[in-house]
Image 1 (cartoon, rainbow, N blue to C red):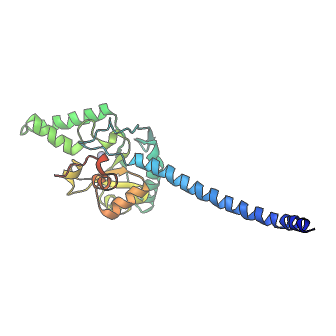
Image 2 (cartoon, rainbow, N blue to C red):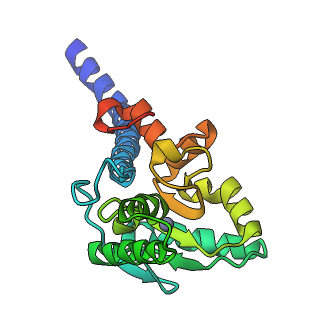
Image 3 (cartoon, rainbow, N blue to C red):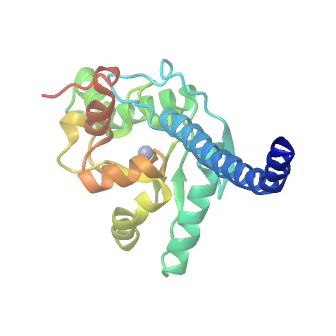
Length: 230
Ligand SMILES: [Zn+2]
């Protein structure tokens, strides 16, 4: 008799146990899903914070550009959507953003550098070495430009736009890459029109810290970013 009662009790309880277990399983799966998405996002973002500067070449960055067209410029496929949103929102604010540069192949970067050196030499006051140094700071030496990744864009000069970008670009995952006063850290002249995609999480932190990508990476990734402080 007793064992029959117990079996009956167990049978009564069973549906509730099943429901609770099912709910627990659903919650666990949901949490795992979120975590998994977070990990995937982090993995992707880490690739997008790739450092390219005079000390870290594009060819050895491990990043393979996948250029696609956007408003007359070529950009990496992974930044097309956030850039599109940025352009759209800027226009809603009454601004007129125009992309004047995006992805550049190694050959195109070489050609731009050579042309810049030629222009500087045509002034007649500089040695070839001096012209090369200035051109490296201005447009980037061949192999050292973020444009070779497709993760950077140049906006046409426009003060109202530049002011808006400084305050808002991070919301779309972009940072002002060459701020004034950071020339020795970035190896490049200040450039208010050059924006670099690093992903939303990194952009938010870099904006809050008012840092360069070099400083940010040296804080979070230590020696993996070879940063030269002068
Ligand atoms: Zn640029």
